[in-house]
Image: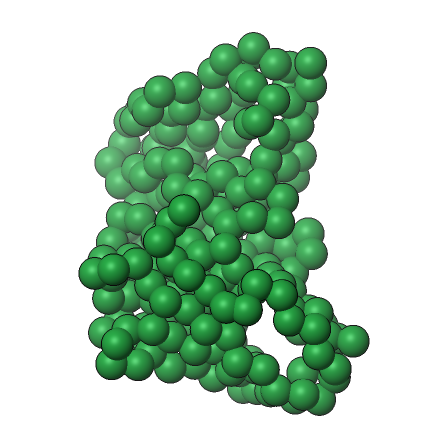
Length: 113
Length: 110
């Protein structure tokens, strides 16, 4: 158990819908990262927050957005969902923005039908 | 941009040694990670190298050559539970973004 929690574990929805994925970092960690992992693909970095501020942006679609709240939990919002958005979404946390290690949560499996 | 290359799949025998290679091209290199990921599960941290040389941690060792843009993960005394994907990841850039390779799927056979 990494100490990072993600909810929900599974999510099934329809095309065109909007969903919110939630992440709580390890106690004391200030930095949160979001990744997308599609079938047979590597982890694609989406976005990083540090202490409430956006720090780095990767291959995140305009239909996706995220934020980190004062209590340091983070939410990833996915809208106008398409079939291709079906994937595992991982959240990771680290103590600081450039920490040696990122600790990953168990992931949310999103299925868009 | 960044480019990270790893073999897609490897097979090795229980009890043997296997070496998984990773080559990368990036600017502002600031460290290389290896993660293990079992199917459908979260990646777990294995090792971190920022200086040239070998880092040993139990059955797992990781090597880095910054001048060659090359790293390898060495797994000794392979066990069936080592069957997993092994992800090479590079940290670089001003904000130290971490970019993952597509991973090497290792199958350990009896």
